[in-house]
Length: 306
Image (cartoon, rainbow, N blue to C red; front, side):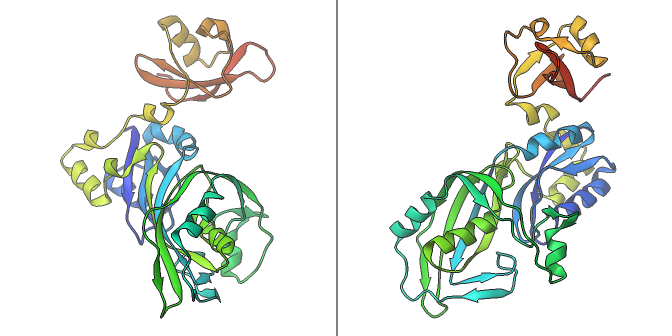
């Protein structure tokens, strides 16, 4: 069984939990996920199966869409609703929708983020959450993130008794974006401690919520021998890559990992990104520009060679 399974990860589970359970359901070991989701977050989690594991990195590189909620009034250790309160400043006068929208607009484009302490980013060989759990502070590296769109999608709700103000949002972003941190930084821009009080991933790896199945649904499809209803082909991971279909003669060279001159593939210039080589409708290899030989390409990753 080879392909990509758009899974709907339910809350309370880690991404690794999903992989562990799927190994039992599908009765196979070669399974990996294409982008971690926190336990408190539900949503689309692409799962790569069999030879599909060879394209995990390309799913992780793709953009993602989230829907969630931001709460002003207090911040937490984890930057979401599961953490302990570390700063509080009650909202006494609610912000207008226009103020909120203007502030959100400033976060669109390329921004700089500092990953939260409760994250899997490694510093000196240890993940940040390991330092956090040990009560240790460590300098965190700055990272660039791409925010394609960051919009408010509900009316702000002011809770005078609790001293909070909340609203729903949607964000479309590039890989490596911490939406929790986006909520905290937006709060800072508005003059209040804040946290992300809710989050769902609506799209990832080119797959949407409407395509995703729960673990229970996957179990049922497996029992009914209907996995083809949900399993997507490996080729979907490279649908945005330049594509070349190989002749029988070229396939013999590609399957043996040979270097190829660009003109043999019909290329006047070599694209900056990887080129997806197909044979008989199947993705067989990914080629890239040779770093030393001008006008030549070399295999970057072999997907199939039989």
